[in-house]
Length: 398
Ligand SMILES: Cc1cc2nc3c(=O)[nH]c(=O)nc-3n(C[C@H](O)[C@H](O)[C@H](O)COP(=O)(O)OP(=O)(O)OC[C@H]3O[C@@H](n4cnc5c(N)ncnc54)[C@H](O)[C@@H]3O)c2cc1C
Image (cartoon, rainbow, N blue to C red):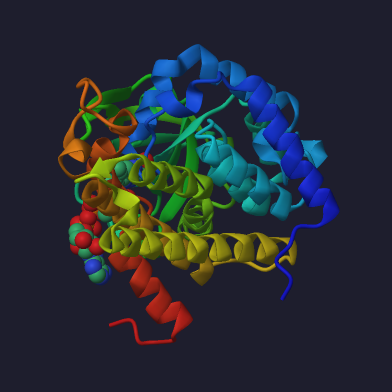
């Protein structure tokens, strides 16, 4: 099996590198404390507001927000492998890139949406004009997503929505909810759900902040009180939302900041080389070497799955179990990386960025808290194992 990139792919990788060098502020990668796999530290992108906007605009101009989309919808018409190369390089530099609209909503619309919906939404998403947030979970609905209660009732050409969503990451800095609602309460739970796009500014939408374990405002609870939405915003067919949700969730599990793992690992290795304990560099200690090697191996495994999925997409295959495997491997890596970072750095790992004793901008300290979110969001590790057991191994449901 040949894992090397083609000449065209190598040239594209270089083009992305040059772009990042030119467009991202020099101190960006140092200042940015995003922990790979975590959701909580994403919130700091807000702090860089105008810089993020500017960078995203430049990506959109090049069609790089949606690299593998056809040109007619504002994409760059490149391969999924090129998309993966781009994503790997961007995440290595902790650069802002694909979001929910470009990585989850858009690809789902492209697969199941009407031609009218594609024309209305895809070009705007590709230009970076629209940001979605995911409105699936409710106070009593998480893993058992089909139990959702938020109702949408037909009224002429509109739907009227009532209910509450929770844990909506970045809802407060997005334009629209990519939302699952119950449209037929008489049908079996999986058959009465629709997927609809709801504008955040619609009368009756109230967004309230929830502060996460890292102290950032990353997620929200959102209330819908008689919110009117045109039926043309329903994705695909009414009451088929459950099947579309499964497609969207697979796309979500593929949005992995793979390069971020390598970057953060390299920083921890550098720390181990440069830091002395009892006159000896930490990196000389066999115990530390063992821990670092374990992470290095797992990063390589994650990369293999990552490239394999890009290859599958280019072959027209649908990654389903593979999306769950990638999600599982990388989120557990997120936690192991934080754990190893803490063990290598000892007490210094626990010091926040405000102290003169903090190391690596306090990113391991925050990452240790943030990584727990990786194992829960987009379906918990237990749910991913259930999916792999049923669809991959063919084991019985219960
Ligand atoms: C940081 C973060 C960001 C999030 N962002 C969003 C977002 O933007 N939009 C959104 O809609 N939701 C979001 N979520 C919510 C997330 O999707 C849910 O938290 C997740 O699906 C789990 O649901 P729950 O929290 O209700 O836990 P529960 O479903 O109550 O699960 C509790 C525990 O039981 C286990 N469990 C449950 N069912 C099974 C089963 N069948 N087999 C084995 N174990 C099981 C779970 O694995 C878990 O350990 C986010 C969550 C986090 C932590």
